[in-house]
Length: 422
Length: 150
Image (cartoon, each protein chain N blue to C red):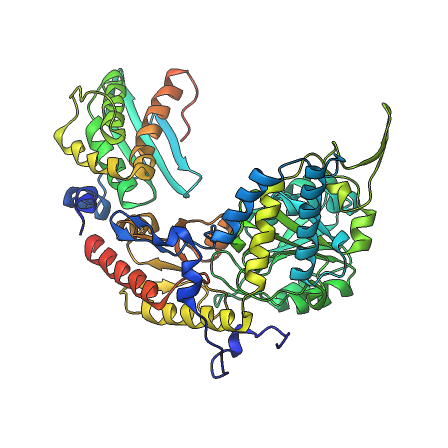
């Protein structure tokens, strides 16, 4: 088994192993339902992915067989629940290539994880005049938390610009970097245009000035093999629900020495060492950052999702999704007045289009009547909308179970949009 | 095209989307409000000129989908010349029609009945009512004695 990730730009021409999409589809019960009398064509995977039977069954089994609180009881059920919960932490560490399970913190999702980093790390290191660099393509969840902590600490937020072709302007990034830069908060892959950012290069440049790199991995982990050690990022966050797992849980990876030095974020049960009325001392990471009863069933579901996808042949998956998105890009050109945003970017299987004279919401409604589920709107990325001079886009995002026939359904649907709305 | 879709995108709606009426800023407005749907980014400004109790001019500008734009355009036509009370009454009737509520008390201009098609797409009800809410808010702000925003 090759262990290096295949850069998506190099897939074409290489021998790509076959991806058995029919077999994968059979694992997802929802894919057999109909919408408005049509077979469901689910192309909204960047919003949330569908769940395989293995995830549904694992969560059901947890509630039926060993539901109990974790880290608290000495009884058998609690022991079983704790073992399952902590087992998922180890799985997540393996999935991300983290060296130790202690570097894995359970959070509510990518948003929760990024807020944790901003409030705890940012809140303790940022000083007036310091700078946090974000990118123009950040999801609001890797921008607004930095604004909030910036207001509290007096640090400023500046953005690395996005070029017309959809990539980050690394020259501008270099000019923005300086002794005041404390944090570089960057998405691994854009949730709007799918563009993949070169985290290795960004981390090298950021580390040269002593800044830490916080990566929003929500849109990359479903599509690319990720290794946090190889990328050398300092923090990495992702959500379970975009990775075929349940909602309500996500993972924060943080380098051990950074987590060790960070103050608690939320106080409560479980995260303490000793509590007195006047003051308390706190547990070591990751427990320090996990106040209260965690989402245990969701952790079990995430564990099932990780087990399911880690059994995949990722070379085959990446090759398949890249072929699918390339075909979508090609066939969409047949729709008159349609433009793909950030067309030149290397991208995960996510793309956004705008159609001359057609609002994305109207297009999405017409597609829905044909059973095709896409996303229309600003995708929680208003600065990127402004960058491209649009108020909203139509986004199609493909996952492991999507097919070339579904690409055709999308394209035919957009031809119909043109016929209806002129 | 499905029947639902046919009813949603009737030619009257498409016509108002392509060529919205009263699409301008009203310089001498006495009431103004902004209608914004933060979920989708749609945004409209609605201006009214109220003389005595009567709405003598209505205009709007903004960005949004065909449903929201056509609805705004037809709203301006519907409330122009009405009293403030009549405009509020129209708001209620319109809301009933698009949300499929009420017993069809009537009193809505026949043209606005085309928005009944929205009922099959509940998520789009907000699109159809966005400018109507802005119109109502503008009248209410005016009623509370607040300075109208230009």
